[in-house]
Length: 228
Image (cartoon, rainbow, N blue to C red; front, top):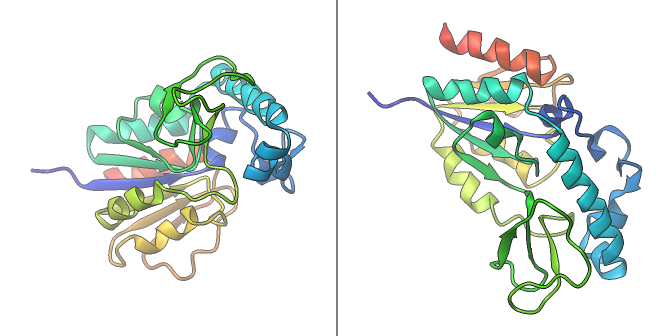
């Protein structure tokens, strides 16, 4: 018998409990930076050195972080379900916790790409510096979807959500689009679970169970509910 498909949309709240701060918590500031100065194409044109420095530090932060109980709990669900994680996060904590099917909507901190050719993508664990070039001779930049940029992976995510038997939202405020719109593609009749310290507005969504807890505790509740 084939396993039921669980699709999980994760956001900043799940990584926050591993000590990774995000702009979500503090009025558009991310580690003291205005996101417009470090996470937009205009910022890259204006001061690429500052943008590289910012993401080099984020990369170090992720290397120092470890998956938490929520990451491990979602990976554990693979024993009984066909689980796909769609994450808004740029870290690799889901991978390190053991989840196998992960789709990164907003890019990955441990990858870099040509500033001109999005298909020229390379792995990176250290720093990206001004003067580091891709195969096409263009400056390398973080493989991150910045504000005001298209989110190409959303087109891969939509059919995944449409195929779900169970849909779960963990640690996302459902205000960043197009990612937030994915909840509207989950089939109306399937069960949905929303886990967050502050439950976002899902009034337009049917069959929702809210678990108003931090991700680490909420995922354990989810596992218990799914086993019953």
